[in-house]
Length: 240
Image (cartoon, rainbow, N blue to C red; front, side, top):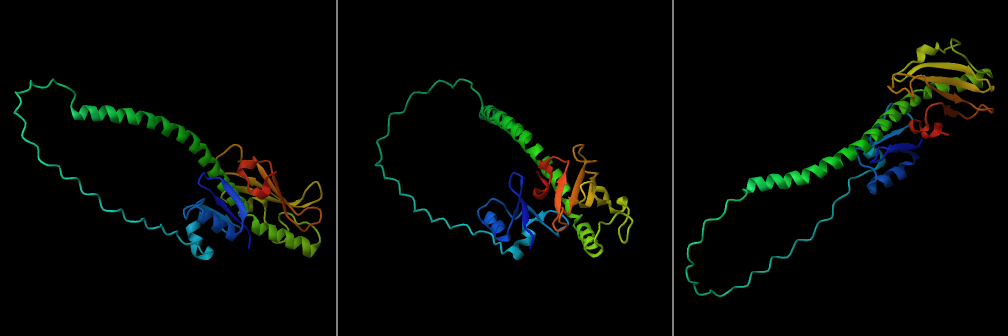
């Protein structure tokens, strides 16, 4: 079975890992049942909880805290003789009410929190945006797996590389998907056989219009992936 990819608590993608390694990450709290995972054959990233039964994941049971001992009874103090009644005290000076004090304390506590929240948002937002873009690219690449099988099968049976419009292969635009605008099939300049994907509708100028290439290599037996998209948005197998 193909390896698993997962997004950790910082929404950074990792993988591929085995099912056992994925279970270990879950048991050590590095990922939760809400964490997104993907493997070859899945249409998109899904929560880890959707595969809990398949992977044998079970929520950890919290240890029972030991009951606290009963409180020690207070010491009995013998009654004291009544003190002489004091003379009436002067009226207290007018000070701040409890409500005003509470407002001041709340303001002192809230102002630093607002600053911290702003810093956290400034860090988390770009990371989430990169995670979202990476998920779209991974989806586009995963949807090309069927075309890889068709191209390799044709090359094995015919002894040459196919091209668009030949046999059961459609036009480049017929392979357009959610985040792919076209797929051009044929032989590359270096003599290898494969196809070129063009990204689109992702919503980022660093990805839309860029290309990703799958080729069978010089021995025509193993697929290789390359792209002109920044590595941080690519699957691990297409980086470098």
